[in-house]
Length: 528
Image (cartoon, rainbow, N blue to C red):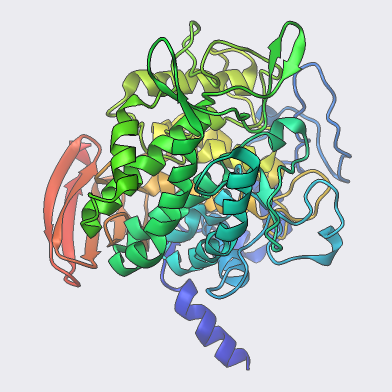
């Protein structure tokens, strides 16, 4: 039985490998908890509180309160690669094709079924997404199929909810749903419950499965029907501005933040930046799918073609930050844990550092505000594990090696358990932080969201040499690479004939691909 299990599990797990260098014999001789403490240079750090407030969480035994800068971080490359692989292990263990998707806590732990806030549900405004961020890029695309199943199974209830709750066609979901697929606006706070973009956000995972696999049968039979239903709701739930003619979605809320109006806290407006970005992404993906499937004449596609250029997009405020709402608002919480309004940069791909430098500069100022209370603030660690690991992915997209390194080190200092579980408050296990940590490491090594395969886009200094095998890029390309101080070598294997651009630093090579035939590409460090 054990041999059968190992063989079956290995068929998935061994698709991707990561090598970040060799650990020392002394590091290898230590148990995991001592290795992690040795990396930290101390015991676990106290989770930071918001400025001016004390941490609400109960300190764990052995927690340290010394400043983070007082400890020297010792890298342990083999353990770091194991942490990367641990998220893949969790995904294989909790989200096989034909099963329920992984929740915040993996597979339905009984001790959490009665927990008031979490309810072991699927939290649609960041958490379930982080679970699945590493799936496609690390060769586990089939593990996303339970998410597709969830959305398909939810279509009837989501359609009823859209029709009876909003007077709209299509489908809608807010902050969360559970395995019973009950349509409702549920959330831990009113600011969470008012949002309407949950189905739209999770629909991007449907498109990503096609983007990485190139499976047109999947796109025709499963993907596009889901995308179009999600898009239909946004088309119906929108209005033109009487002055500018720009189209706004709403009313809705911005997860899970709020703003001040006449001294009172408010949560609802129309034209929420995240909703605008989700709608824009949905329309673009539907149009691209229609072109692939020769469905441009479909009435719903025509509606999206007309609406897309009129859809209002997030603006930059007077202080240089990206606006969370359609106009300047006083945030109730300037340090808020969510940064939903940068959805178009990450996890979306409308914005990138090459095509939108002004917007990416505004995103950097936005995140500095959330970290330190000012658009010019220096780095400060996040107050939750999933937030810290979301930062890691964003710094990789921004190509900011310094902030990537500091964020990465503090994940180990504050949030990683001796079991390698990501830790949040008093819950012994929350899955999303592990998923986003793994995807953030992958984002530093390989990106393909901007129309090209970008090698080592945010390689931090602590990984001067290494290799990976079996990573996946959009366009159906399997990528393996190795690097040291002088050279970068990559092998590409495509699932279909075509061309792609491969970038390393400022050098871009165009490569012709033949289905199933490996192609080697080399870069010299001097071209970076």
